[in-house]
Image (cartoon, rainbow, N blue to C red; front, side, top):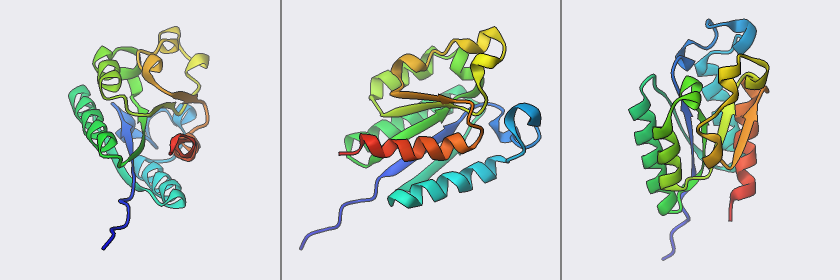
Length: 155
């Protein structure tokens, strides 16, 4: 008896303050809520037959733990990829960089706004050197675009 291959998972991680989407600086981040973003991601995953693990945390260690979990999925051949909007941790977190490098997960760094059109401190990312791709400025639609882009890294 043969078993069907397990469905791959896309892990979408959202960092600090992204729980405030829809109310926090709508001129910068738009009016979509985090629940809207999750639904958008779920639809994008469905197009590829993938499952979605969607999380948000204001705590750096929770995001590091989630990347470690994604690394275990990767080792089992069950990870399609990670989409990470680390929020402000993008500009401060060596711990996230080390987690990404340590697990070697295929990761897209994502930003809703164009960080290069904003304050100078947002122009530097600790995550970019370990990311396979970086997306910014596409609004929340960037999440679906990033998930669709993961298809290019599949065997």
